[in-house]
Length: 277
Image (cartoon, rainbow, N blue to C red):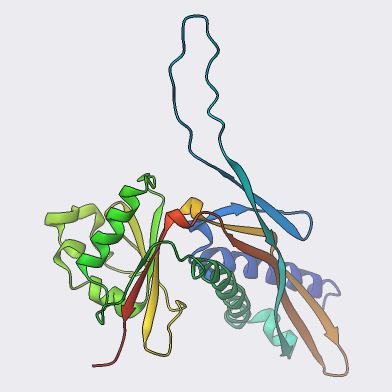
């Protein structure tokens, strides 16, 4: 056997983990503000207030808006997902098994990425729609939509709404959510996948990791991309080391990331009752 096969395997495995993470590991990473390649243990997101336009006299000074500037500091944390792999020779030649292990590590890190973002969304308390002992309804959706309009949250295609799978099923029972008469044929639910849908200028995404309390109340979140930040010093790195005493390689996937709440105005929490019938 070639003495370089270990290095070839390692490079291939690293690439597969990275690709799997980018493709299916995280649902939410691209729905928030991102700062990649951070050098250091913290990252800073800038927050700028609104300005007011004014008139000026002839030859007078242009009025200054005096925008309110602030920043949000995010502390990065290190996360690991490792596993032992025996009979590496078989793994080197079995592409399916290698991809399964690579995807498992990437998915674990992706779930952690989403968890960091959801934890920050959960801290928002400015705009909360109570459960009212019912699930997600058209009235709740319209109330959240009105809240965004009243707060001048941009309707620029960067609004996202993440809901639990129970709420996703409830949305699919609304004519306005699924019928072409309301949303146009281009925004109908996809025929082959059920991971996203556009409605009211918002991308709706079902997610299994949303918080639920002891009373079966699920918190769903409608937010603008600029309301939450996610910083990364390292997306995914893979380290593979041989342990002779175990006759196995240890495959360690790791990343360094953090999230922060930037602007509560751009987040609406929709609480929904999931009590079993």
